[in-house]
Length: 171
Ligand code: SF4
Image (cartoon, rainbow, N blue to C red; front, side):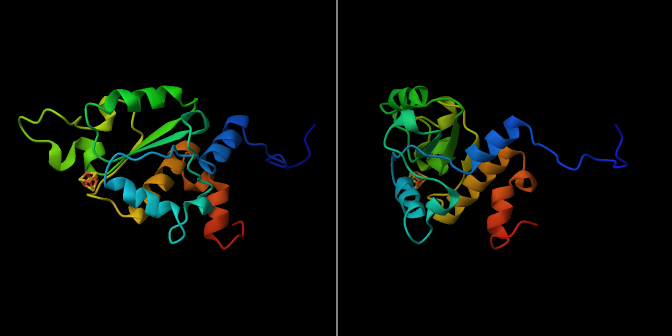
Protein backbone atom coordinates (compact mmCIF):
# COMPACT_ATOMS: atom_id res chain seq x y z
CA UNK A 1 0.00 0.00 0.00
CA UNK A 2 1.32 3.43 -0.93
CA UNK A 3 1.27 6.10 1.74
CA UNK A 4 2.34 8.98 -0.47
CA UNK A 5 6.02 8.99 0.65
CA UNK A 6 8.92 8.35 -1.64
CA UNK A 7 10.97 6.77 1.20
CA UNK A 8 9.91 4.65 4.19
CA UNK A 9 9.42 6.63 7.42
CA UNK A 10 11.81 4.31 9.31
CA UNK A 11 14.95 2.87 7.77
CA UNK A 12 16.92 -0.01 9.27
CA UNK A 13 20.64 -0.38 8.72
CA UNK A 14 21.84 -3.83 7.77
CA UNK A 15 22.92 -6.01 10.68
CA UNK A 16 26.44 -6.06 9.26
CA UNK A 17 26.63 -2.25 9.33
CA UNK A 18 25.49 -2.15 12.97
CA UNK A 19 28.05 -4.78 13.94
CA UNK A 20 30.80 -2.92 12.06
CA UNK A 21 29.84 0.28 13.88
CA UNK A 22 30.09 -1.52 17.23
CA UNK A 23 33.40 -3.15 16.28
CA UNK A 24 34.96 0.10 15.06
CA UNK A 25 34.03 1.96 18.24
CA UNK A 26 35.18 -0.70 20.67
CA UNK A 27 38.47 -2.01 19.34
CA UNK A 28 40.56 -3.85 21.91
CA UNK A 29 44.26 -3.84 20.99
CA UNK A 30 46.59 -6.56 22.19
CA UNK A 31 48.94 -5.13 24.81
CA UNK A 32 52.44 -5.89 23.62
CA UNK A 33 55.34 -3.88 22.25
CA UNK A 34 58.56 -4.75 20.44
CA UNK A 35 60.84 -1.69 20.67
CA UNK A 36 60.95 2.11 21.06
CA UNK A 37 57.69 2.71 19.13
CA UNK A 38 55.90 0.87 21.93
CA UNK A 39 56.70 3.78 24.28
CA UNK A 40 54.66 6.10 22.05
CA UNK A 41 51.87 3.51 21.92
CA UNK A 42 51.84 3.44 25.74
CA UNK A 43 51.77 7.26 25.79
CA UNK A 44 48.72 7.18 23.51
CA UNK A 45 46.84 5.00 25.99
CA UNK A 46 47.42 7.09 29.13
CA UNK A 47 45.84 10.29 30.41
CA UNK A 48 47.13 12.96 28.00
CA UNK A 49 45.94 11.25 24.81
CA UNK A 50 43.52 8.78 26.41
CA UNK A 51 42.62 6.05 23.90
CA UNK A 52 39.81 5.00 26.26
CA UNK A 53 37.65 7.82 24.86
CA UNK A 54 37.63 5.95 21.53
CA UNK A 55 36.48 2.76 23.24
CA UNK A 56 39.95 1.22 23.04
CA UNK A 57 41.31 -0.79 25.95
CA UNK A 58 44.52 -2.78 25.79
CA UNK A 59 43.97 -6.44 26.59
CA UNK A 60 46.57 -8.80 28.04
CA UNK A 61 45.38 -11.86 26.09
CA UNK A 62 45.18 -12.33 22.29
CA UNK A 63 41.92 -14.21 22.81
CA UNK A 64 40.28 -10.98 24.02
CA UNK A 65 41.82 -8.69 21.39
CA UNK A 66 40.71 -7.77 17.87
CA UNK A 67 43.52 -5.36 16.97
CA UNK A 68 47.23 -6.04 16.79
CA UNK A 69 49.47 -2.95 16.87
CA UNK A 70 52.92 -4.04 15.72
CA UNK A 71 54.97 -1.34 17.45
CA UNK A 72 58.69 -1.66 16.92
CA UNK A 73 61.46 -3.62 15.28
CA UNK A 74 60.57 -7.22 14.37
CA UNK A 75 63.51 -9.51 14.96
CA UNK A 76 63.52 -12.86 13.19
CA UNK A 77 63.37 -14.51 16.61
CA UNK A 78 60.13 -12.68 17.44
CA UNK A 79 58.42 -13.30 14.07
CA UNK A 80 57.00 -16.77 14.91
CA UNK A 81 55.72 -15.42 18.26
CA UNK A 82 53.89 -12.55 16.54
CA UNK A 83 52.40 -15.01 14.07
CA UNK A 84 51.24 -17.26 16.92
CA UNK A 85 49.63 -14.31 18.76
CA UNK A 86 47.86 -13.30 15.53
CA UNK A 87 46.56 -16.85 15.05
CA UNK A 88 45.23 -16.86 18.62
CA UNK A 89 43.17 -13.69 18.07
CA UNK A 90 39.53 -14.39 17.12
CA UNK A 91 38.03 -13.09 13.87
CA UNK A 92 37.29 -10.42 12.78
CA UNK A 93 40.67 -8.85 13.54
CA UNK A 94 42.86 -6.06 12.22
CA UNK A 95 46.53 -5.17 12.21
CA UNK A 96 48.22 -1.77 12.34
CA UNK A 97 51.96 -1.44 11.61
CA UNK A 98 53.31 1.39 13.77
CA UNK A 99 56.62 3.00 12.82
CA UNK A 100 59.13 2.55 10.04
CA UNK A 101 60.56 -0.66 11.54
CA UNK A 102 57.16 -2.39 11.48
CA UNK A 103 56.43 -1.06 7.99
CA UNK A 104 59.73 -1.82 6.24
CA UNK A 105 62.51 -2.60 8.73
CA UNK A 106 63.31 1.11 9.28
CA UNK A 107 66.93 2.02 10.04
CA UNK A 108 67.83 -1.64 10.58
CA UNK A 109 67.11 -2.70 7.00
CA UNK A 110 70.41 -2.53 5.09
CA UNK A 111 72.34 -4.81 2.81
CA UNK A 112 73.76 -7.76 4.70
CA UNK A 113 71.55 -7.49 7.79
CA UNK A 114 70.42 -10.89 8.96
CA UNK A 115 68.37 -10.33 12.11
CA UNK A 116 65.39 -8.14 11.20
CA UNK A 117 62.15 -8.87 9.33
CA UNK A 118 61.64 -5.95 6.90
CA UNK A 119 57.96 -5.36 7.55
CA UNK A 120 55.03 -6.81 9.50
CA UNK A 121 53.22 -7.51 6.23
CA UNK A 122 55.58 -10.46 5.71
CA UNK A 123 54.10 -12.14 8.83
CA UNK A 124 50.50 -10.90 9.21
CA UNK A 125 48.03 -9.03 6.96
CA UNK A 126 48.50 -5.31 7.69
CA UNK A 127 45.48 -3.00 7.32
CA UNK A 128 47.01 0.39 8.20
CA UNK A 129 50.58 1.73 8.30
CA UNK A 130 51.56 4.67 10.52
CA UNK A 131 54.99 5.98 9.39
CA UNK A 132 57.53 7.72 11.63
CA UNK A 133 60.54 6.91 13.77
CA UNK A 134 58.75 6.90 16.11
CA UNK A 135 55.29 8.21 15.18
CA UNK A 136 53.84 10.44 17.87
CA UNK A 137 50.70 9.34 19.76
CA UNK A 138 48.65 11.73 17.57
CA UNK A 139 49.91 9.82 14.51
CA UNK A 140 48.85 6.52 16.03
CA UNK A 141 45.41 7.95 16.88
CA UNK A 142 45.04 9.20 13.29
CA UNK A 143 45.91 5.70 12.06
CA UNK A 144 43.36 4.16 14.41
CA UNK A 145 40.67 6.56 13.16
CA UNK A 146 41.58 5.61 9.58
CA UNK A 147 41.12 1.97 10.59
CA UNK A 148 37.71 2.83 12.06
CA UNK A 149 36.81 4.40 8.70
CA UNK A 150 38.00 1.29 6.89
CA UNK A 151 35.75 -0.90 9.06
CA UNK A 152 32.64 1.29 8.84
CA UNK A 153 33.11 2.46 5.24
CA UNK A 154 33.96 6.08 6.07
CA UNK A 155 33.39 8.72 8.73
CA UNK A 156 30.00 9.64 7.25
CA UNK A 157 28.67 6.23 8.30
CA UNK A 158 30.34 6.26 11.71
CA UNK A 159 27.53 7.84 13.73
CA UNK A 160 29.33 7.58 17.06
CA UNK A 161 32.36 9.48 15.69
CA UNK A 162 30.15 12.23 14.31
CA UNK A 163 28.36 12.35 17.65
CA UNK A 164 31.67 12.83 19.50
CA UNK A 165 33.00 15.38 17.00
CA UNK A 166 29.88 17.54 17.19
CA UNK A 167 30.02 17.92 20.95
CA UNK A 168 27.72 14.96 21.64
CA UNK A 169 25.06 16.16 19.16
CA UNK A 170 23.89 14.21 16.11
CA UNK A 171 23.99 16.11 12.84
S1 SF4 B 1 60.73 3.04 13.89
FE1 SF4 B 1 62.31 4.13 15.07
S2 SF4 B 1 61.36 4.48 17.08
FE2 SF4 B 1 60.16 2.85 16.04
S3 SF4 B 1 61.06 0.93 16.74
FE3 SF4 B 1 62.08 1.49 14.82
S4 SF4 B 1 63.92 2.63 15.49
FE4 SF4 B 1 62.52 2.55 17.23
